[in-house]
Every structure is written in C-alpha cells, then in structure tokens.
Length: 261
Image (cartoon, rainbow, N blue to C red):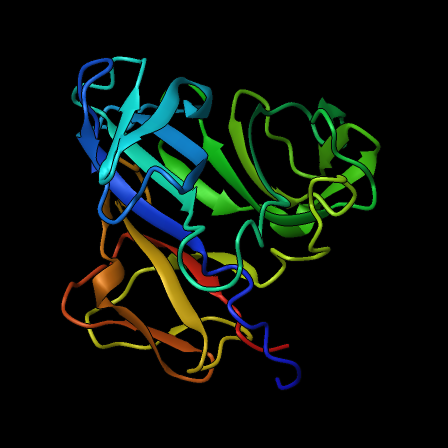
C-alpha cells in the first residue's frame, strides 16, 4: 500500500497496562503529564484471573506528572490506560474522534444503544469477550458489526451473555475538528507463535508503528494480559514478530498505527 503519509495522526495516543491500587491512590503511568488527556481506562478484574472488563474512565484523572488515580478500588486488578499525549508533536487533540464503548451483547442483528453514534461514524474494532461474567476468550468481531441506525449498534454474531469492546471514530461531532483523524489506528487480535516467528497482519508495512501489544494467556481461557509492547515489531510487510517471548497457545492484542494509506 502506498499514498499520503498520515503524519503522526494517531500516535499522540499512548497505551499502558498498569497494576491497580486502592481508591484515590497514585498509580504510576510512565510519561503521562497533567497537560495530557485520559481517553479510556479499562478495568480488568482480577489481574491474575480475568473475569470482567468495565469502563472506569469517568472515575479517573491525571493527578500529577507520571501518576493517575481512580476513585474506584482497583487493588489486585489491571488497568488499561489510553491517553492523548498533547505535548508530543504538533497534533494536539488530533485524534479525539476516538471513542470507546463496553456493551452487553445480545442476539444477532439486534440493536444495542451507543449514545451519540451515527451511521456516518466509523467502527475501528469490536472485541467479542465471552462470557460477560467470566471472560474466557476474545475474538475480533469487527467485520460483523455496524451502526444500523443513529444511536444503534448491531453485530451479525449472537453475543448473548457476552461483552463487546467497541472502538469507533466519531466523524460527525463538532469537537472532532480533524475529520477522520483516528482512522490510522488499527487493532488486531492474533494467534500467538514462537518467538521470532512471523504472524500475518494483513496490510501492515514495516514503516507502520506498533503502539501496544497485550499478551493474553491463554487463547482458550483468558486469565491474564501482560504488556509486551517493547518486543513487538513488523519485521517485513504483512508480518509481525515477538522478539523473545513464546506466545504459542495464547493471543496477542495488537494496536498499531498505519502511517501510510
């Protein structure tokens, strides 16, 4: 693929997995500053044996350089922090069309309310977590999903008793001045492999940027997620590798930035 460079249009976004703590206690998040903006905090409970994922964003804030706090007790749990680094480069608020929703699933082709979404908006990723009460697996359901009408989301998959993690780009909000500013963000759920072994990622180029790699153990029974971002790279066009950790029987949750279209 070739074309116009996307000029760092989404890599103001930073991602980090951090251990939770008691309510209103500083939780270290490397490089975050009080000028930055929290976009999403996903609260996985518990860290050692994941049973649930909820959106804790409204309860969280950046309290000082390098620290966030949650009003929720997240002790023994895991937090996925996503923030907009407004001090990194010229792209202040460049990707604020990005939205996150955690939804309770339902029968196939049935409306699920997503407030503010329109049929003109763009679904970037849908992770289907089974089940809602005790997560065992996660698969990529994006291709089966759409905004059927304004404010309504649907999947062609039966997701009853399950959970959907939806990432979408708000192309119509007046606050999203940079139209389509988040479309370079890509999210892929991959089957793991031995270290230094190619894993196919359709459309990826060696010039694309790895933003986050979550290592989920195991693919058949998700019990833990570790941050292995530093090990992941696109070693050739369409191929991704982990440098040292064997991830066979596991999943890799890859977030990446397509730098050209």
